[in-house]
Length: 436
Image (cartoon, rainbow, N blue to C red; front, side, top):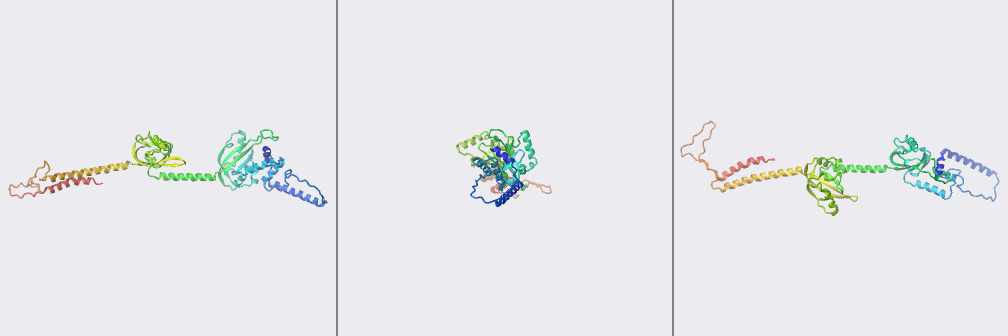
């Protein structure tokens, strides 16, 4: 039955001109009938048998081409009762679909379109029926569609038949939008007499889904990911995200700069590649133990651990790990900070502190030893003579030591005065060297 219905739909060519012609003819017939009835005597008690409305096609076609086609098909096939109900049920089911649907013949001519198709593309049902399906093709496919169809019919090589592809479509107003297009060939297995046979006519069904909203959402997701990645890359410290199997899923630019691997080399690899010391081969065990026991030794804390660069050199980092749950799956985020400069500064400050302690300790110790001696001399020192030896003058002359015992003696300094002078001599030069 379906084969006969399709054949009748394909063979039926309804247009506004034919409809108007039928309307005029029907009106003429009605006028003549009315005139003859006026001239004839009135009939008395004449029983008029009411005919089945489907026994003849309506004299005036319905205003909707779809209903007109169904009425003619039902009349030509003499469909009544259950068959007619089944035909209308199929039609209602197709029209109830949310996505556009088309049926075309082997020449590319549209023989069926549903309500969603008219709403989506802006054409009326009358404009669709009998038109080439290329009217809804976008891009450069509009002019080549018939070529695609003929190539498939000749070679049997399917480029889109039996598949779903994303292609551009065009509305009646000329605007284009992305759609998901699936095309399948209809298998007609029922003959005119109801016996199983394969018809020579070939029909194709096209199922269209508007991807405009999906593309908009995808663009928003991509923009959100780009913004998130930009925020991660703006961090001065390396950041990683790994899954439950220790595989790196997110990495920022600071990690690339510090460790020497590219983002492509990081993503999809095990985080143990940056572990230093003996932690590299044991890292998988750490994760597995935490997942099994829930005992966190590193997660939620910050610790100083060794790390390794791509060139094999190792250095100390401050590592903090946090756990987050996304979609029921655990994700671990790691934040690392290079401690090389920090440790160098600490060592420099420690060296300076030790140097100051040593310098002041030696000065204080020497002063204590001097104060403990009654004569103000350290062990091994000799008391200086009362009269200093002669010193050269600016004239180059020298004075001989006075032989007279009455020469005035040189004033003696106290032990405290001598220790203070000696302390200044030992401490002052070293303090100048410590200025930073």
